[in-house]
Image (cartoon, rainbow, N blue to C red; front, side):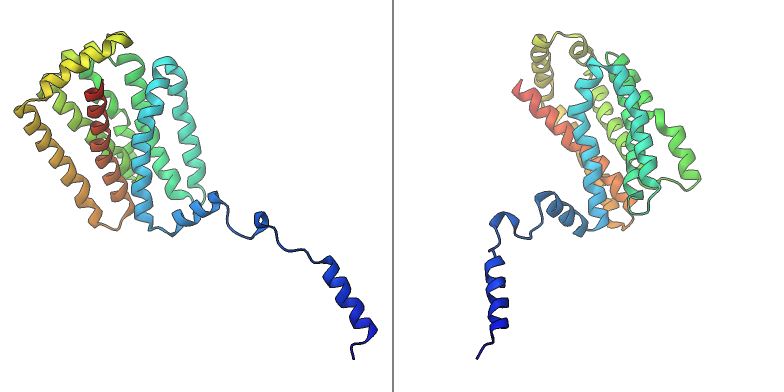
Length: 251
C-alpha cells in the first residue's frame, strides 16, 4: 500500500503541473536560427556573401543619401572605420572588421564622387582610387588583407564599367543623366538603351563581362578568405551593372 506521505507528495506534484504552452516551447527564435545557419557555413562562403552585400546594398542606400546629404555620407566613412577597427580587436569578429574597413574606402570614394563630381565621368576612376595609398601601405605591412582585397576587387569592377562607358562613347549621356531633372532621366536612359542595343555594344559588353567573370571566379579556387572577398567584389559588379541595365530597359 502507498503510504499517506507518498500520496501527499504525488497530489502536490499533480496540482502544480501545467502543460507547456506552444509559445514557450524551447526552440530558437528566428534571429538565432539565422545566426546559427550563418555560422555553420564555411568562412570563405560567408566572406564572399559579405563582400557581395557590401557592394550591392550601398548602391541603393548611399546613392540617394549622398545626393541629398553629401556631408553626412562623407562623415559616415569615419563611422565605418571606427566600427571596423573595434571589430578587429576581437578574434571572433576580426575578419568582419577587416572587410568593413576596406568597405570604408569604397564608401569614401563614392561619397566624394557622387556628392560633388558626379557630372564629370573622367574623374570617377581617379576618385574611386583614393584609397589606393592606404591599401598599399596596409598590404606592405601585412595588415587587413581581406579588406584590402575587397577594395581592389571593387576598384577593378569600377574600372571595367568605366571602360565600357568610354568605349561606347556614353560620356555625353552620363553627363545628361547627372544634370537632368527626375522626369527627364527616363528619356536620357532610352537614348542610352538605343545605343546599347546594337551588335557592337552587345559584343563589347560580352567581352568585358566574360573577362570580369573569369577574374571573379578563378580566385575562388583559393582557400584564403581575402581572395573570396576580392571575388565577391568583382562578381558584384556584374550584378549591379545588370540591375542598372534592367532599370534602364524598364524606364
